[in-house]
Length: 209
Ligand SMILES: Cc1cc2nc3c(=O)[nH]c(=O)nc-3n(C[C@H](O)[C@H](O)[C@H](O)COP(=O)(O)O)c2cc1C
Image 1 (cartoon, rainbow, N blue to C red):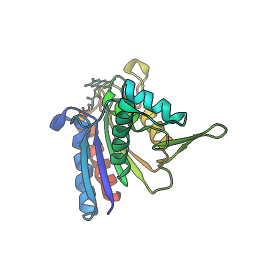
Image 2: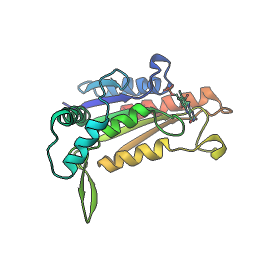
Image 3: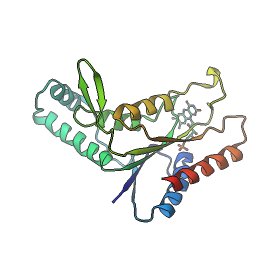
């Protein structure tokens, strides 16, 4: 069965603009794909492991061909379980508010936990990285929101390290079928018009799946 996983990175629950847009996407997706399984993972629900000293040590051990032991072994198992949760999905929907020009740290934490050799990437000394999620029909949709910065605005309103960083990561994993939905009302824009457009885009994207 095709599985869609919505990964929500705003902690604002029902007040979250990015999650509201995600709900519109999911409603349309569900109508178009009634046989698909849909799950939402709120990254703030406490299930995401940390990636601290034991995990970093495990990564360096695996990278150099070794096997993590003791504390590092359990940190590595937690990373593997988290990766399996991500990798079990054929369709990924990410709702991503801008935080200080980038992404919320909880989403960076997910990236740091799952971006491991043999999971998300391989590396060859001559040819460099290869994304291990490539060629498996995976598709991603990403909802980007912000309140101050917007595409027409210059650096006095901030810069977009949110979508540049996140899309680069997705492509690095090997996922290159990416649909983007944006909601950037800015401080002087028409919030209702911007919101309406974002929800319309989400509906269209959800139906297309
Ligand atoms: C911690 C934090 C940092 C933020 N940083 C920025 C920022 O750098 N630029 C910006 O335009 N908006 C910023 N915002 C506003 C949010 O990106 C914006 O309100 C977004 O739509 C929130 O999404 P959400 O409602 O799904 O949480 C920030 C909000 C928070 C809570």
